Image 1 (spheres, helix red, strand yellow):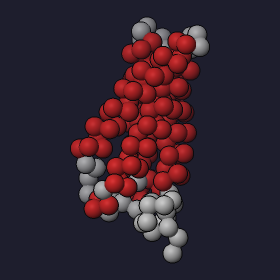
Image 2: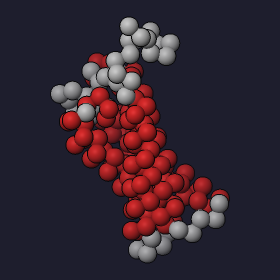
Image 3: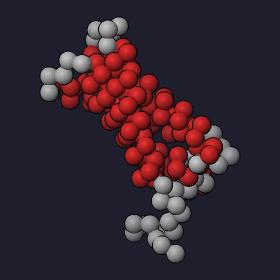
Image 4: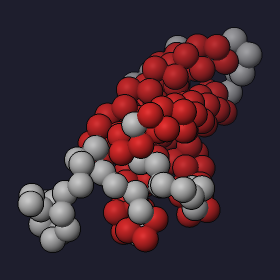
Length: 147
């Protein structure tokens, strides 16, 4: 049986990287979409970035929830349980951090488009959220989530 990267635990599916990649793409796409939609409505770019990151993470959660029923291993879904509070706090943290980092990176490069602010913020928030979920479920095998 193959062992996962030096941890001594059996590899049970290898879907963690797939989940991270899907979260990255969805964060970028939906972050840009919401950034563009909010561009004319919200003048403050920092608030726009945080909201775009939040909505991107919300859409990632909805995709994970609905597609997780069909492909539970690919979407980091604990079997028979709700998502723990620690994961929800991590998701909220990811949204805020992704939005603030996206704003600062956009400002550093002189970005003027709300869609680009949303793209950067959603990508960072999606990666951050997926990594936090993967680490949490790896460290808490009692949640019975397999990768």
